[in-house]
Amino acid sequence: MASPRLETFCCPSRDPATDLVLGFQPAFFNGMSAASAGLGLLGTAAQLLPKRRLGYRRLSHSSLHKPAASSRILLFLSICDMLGCVGIIIRSLVWLSFPDFVSKISVNGTEIWPPAFCVASAMWIQLFYSATFWWLFCYAIDVYLIVKRSSGVSILVLYHMMTWGLAILLCVEGVAMLYYPSISSCEKGLQHAIPHYVTTYTPLLLVLLVNPILFSKTAAAVAGLLKGRQGIYTENERRLGTEIKLRFFKILLVFVICWLPNLINESLLFYLELQPDMNVDGLKNVRNAALITWFIMSILNPMQGFLSTLAFYGWTGCDFYLKFQRQEVPWESPETSAAADNAFSSPAGTSVNYHHGFRQQPPKVPTANGYENSDELSVVSEGNGTTDNGFVKIAPVYQGL
Image 1 (cartoon, helix red, strand yellow):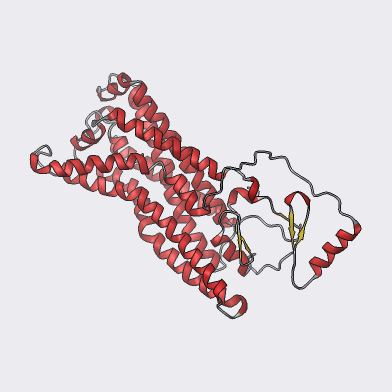
Image 2: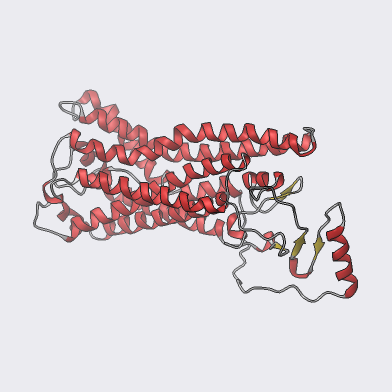
């Protein structure tokens, strides 16, 4: 799981609320965290591996172009989730296998490696999950710019700078403030830890508050694009617009389910820390609620990556295609070649089916920004490799990344 309490636990002078949650059934908690992270890691990897039933798409040289930035953003987001799960698994297994090693963290200044591992593993988890927040924020920006015809692959460099720059900056700044003047002599007091919690939850709150606005504006702009294709708004266009809205809703729903327990838990722990004595009977229900949400976090946080891929692509199946050698299109007979030429010159724009599942599509005329109406909508509605109303919907891992 990802929580600023993990870094706070590395301080010998940690607060009572952190001791409450991290000291309650630590073996059971770490076992649940490792199991959930393992399932999330395997599920995300299974979703991203190529599948036989989805096939491959080969474009002609005149129509070949790189995938949109949003397609790569989804892939980078999933990779960051997987790396965060790796950090949770390693940390949990060490906590389970070496309890004596963990107990030495609270010894003031006499041990080096236990606190160092505690800080390094906590920062690893925080960094990559913070990166997933920034990538998801960039995705909302990019799909909005796509429908406004203002985005492209080149903007991906700016997204990398914003995501990794802000994630590293906030992570380092928060940890530096928390461990001042040193990890062996952290200052006590709630005010000392507040900057660390602010830097941790800022990107999370940004996604919760801003992404719904960007997604709603994108969905509204999609309706205009659909009407502009043929000047009418038929049932097919209405169905595609509904699918895009549903896709955005599922993305936000997964995020809220996975991370709302963190905000609730942190609010409860802050409330306990403000009390003169958090162990009085009158606060028993608050303590129980904090412990319940703490264990819910250990399950839902690592599952974000797998659940997000389901929201992005749907279930892609288990028919893996692990042969990555490049396949060439076989030589065609003159009759077939002539048919292909006629197909490309046809105003209807029909496609030609080749052997081995390759499909060559006719060249398209791009706009000034390199997108067409169908390109913009296919990027926004890309899913698990199905087609709907002429729009090819393929996950980024199947687009030659």
